[in-house]
Length: 313
Image (cartoon, rainbow, N blue to C red):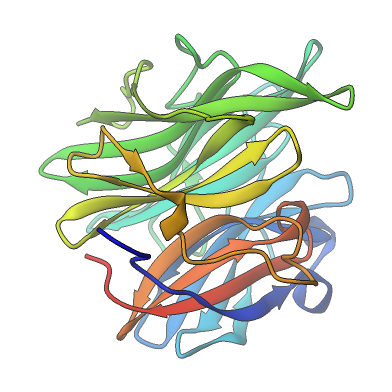
């Protein structure tokens, strides 16, 4: 393939937390915005919203599909709160993926826990909604993706497909820290695993993409089927401070060819996404594909939207 698959036109910061935030649990940020079709007119964007202490809980923002800058509704309480004290998700939860099925909506989320000798631990939990996504109930208080070889500190699921009786799962894994200016930042890369049973996910996955050059982390994989192949958007970080999206292609979902020159979107000259641009997630609407993404400081101001003609699937 030559040239970008999608050519993105930015529509700006469509959800600004200072304008639309509700309650002390939504004081700042809208981390990893993840769209889900609610009905013909509405897209629901799930995200992690931080309180004043920086602890994230998952809520949603409903936007008009034809005009995503139009906010239809904001959840007044979390659809998934932090876990019980001592559990893997007792210090914050962010959105990994949401997968609608005939028996309900499955939510894959990343739970954070503070420990004495590392910055944090982050592993994956599973919850389910039987009321159209208004609230979610944990299917286990233990993580479904836990520690394993090469993932002693991070096992964070961010993209899931269910095909022919198998759950296909792409996730970030890590077990080290990169010190920049004396501060620790997590090192991680992207793996793939599949399972027929979400409560028995193998702990060892297949390596898909690893950092290159001065990169020390590559994660938040979002995988789509486009034109008979798999396409992955991801975010990578460098020791010089870059935090940007990339793109890769695969025929089998396991082995990937990275072509970041095809990503089709870049930093703005100024404003909310001029220093970092991260966590893109896509959804089809009519003849266009919409990208929801975060900007500076991992979405501290909210999330934005970009649009391209084209088709997913």
